Image 1: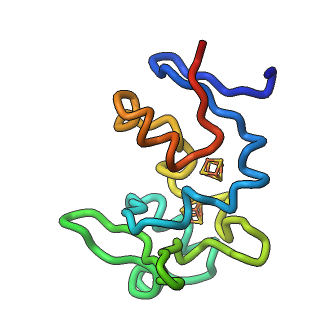
Image 2 (image 1 turned 90 degrees about the vertical axis):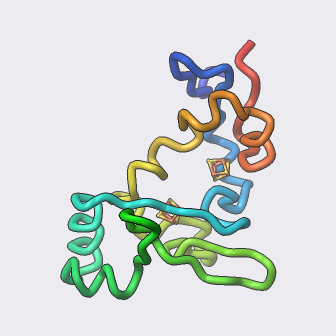
Image 3 (image 1 turned 60 degrees about the horizontal axis):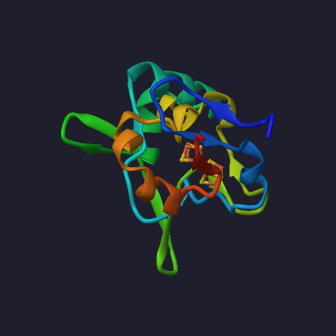
Length: 127
Ligand code: SF4
Ligand code: SF4
């Protein structure tokens, strides 16, 4: 399929059309960390018309020395604070963290493709 995205060093490809019907499995489901660095905090705070300090208090928590976006518990699932169920989209899409922009091409998944396939229906083997 011509819309497939491939990246050097990865044994899989990604079909972005899958996002239309997937209900954002990468933004919901199991609890996880959505890390933001200092420049991302500045950018997202500005996008939300908040100071970095107020944004941090409202939307972030610390894990070790890093900040992660808070999640909401919805029934037995968790979802990112910026996931919008009504539109099935990201409320901060234009300034979303690099971690979100680069999914599903993370180093972590290079050797864990089966785990990734369970999370992301857009991932298929690159053959
Ligand atoms: S889990 Fe995969 S298919 Fe679903 S929205 Fe995220 S990137 Fe798209
Ligand atoms: S910031 Fe946006 S793209 Fe990233 S997990 Fe949250 S809702 Fe999803």
